[in-house]
Length: 502
Image 1: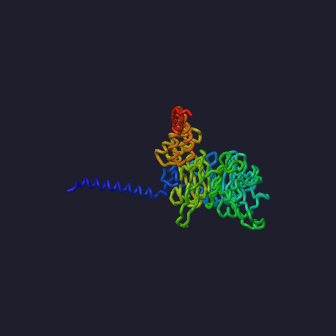
Image 2: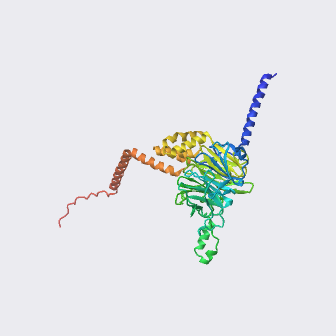
Image 3: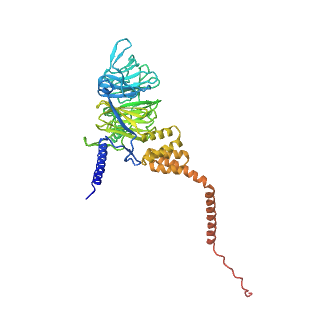
């Protein structure tokens, strides 16, 4: 007869195991996305998370009633968040902890003392220089510039200029640089952002995208070379896609486009002259390979709907197609991929805007009417620490954090690149070559190999010189020996025999 105590213990253990398995499955089922990154071959591989969804906050939780199609979010220098609550015709400010609303801006006082209201505001920016709010008041066909007491300083409306040929003026996003110049993204405008002086005077357009060089466009260009002026005038002109959103970081403006049909100028880094710093670099943003959409039976290319430059210089891109956040370092090396199209926490239906603050990311969903907050994981903190040290010039100090990253995720390509670069700076060329090969970085490998070759020649110069001298002496000896062998052998001439006298 079996011991009943042992039977009960066995049943209890089985229940615990089954329960833990069920919890594990439930946890997996509750995750809206799998964490992944890309290896040296551009293949998606599992990876540790740099961010994890913490909570989703609604307008009702903040005490201002439900949001309705919010479309932008901005955090100012005082750590106050501004949300463009589009269909509620208002701007809502929220405290740094995102626990309660501070103020609702829906009515403003004009310079003449009259009042004005917002109509579908789609963009918000607050200057750290003058403290003004710049509001893309779309349905009122204007950019409203106001102080924080809701006193309007001036309006920007449709320019009366021959350069501005668009029939409408529908601001979508707005930013201002430290000099006070105002940049406005307009709906249905493909000539770049409209640029205005600090007083609101129209100055022209800035940062237009290039035309995607497709086979059709190239063929059309070649045909135009051999057609008459009359026929060329009747041809349909190819135009680039417009800018969707932008962000400013010091003297640079970063722009993005949500066109899924364009791969050129998806993300740009523009200097003061409007030149794209990324133009000559082979860069891609979003998923390396298009995502297959079973609902539409088609491959969906990335469509970057918003861009954010974090305080540490990292570039955050929000992809409308997949609902994912792609984070890159200053050199556009991929760090993390976060989020998805899903109903659970951490997923989105209609991702609209993105902002960073400290170690957290904030994403606005214009269908769920929420702001989802992602917090940095311990793995993300180590990666960011290593990247920050390297970017600040502390290459050797960054080495140990990069090693720690690889101990946690041996396939993490950015860490392999970080170690290769740090060892290259340190003069460990052989070690740099090893990690550059793991990362598939030919440029770093070639630089390390040049250093390795130089050090090898320097270290073994005496031995190499001796070997070369010995080889040269041997070649001379063999050459002389061979030449001697080729000379004809001497012929002995016999003495003349005494002959008879004639």
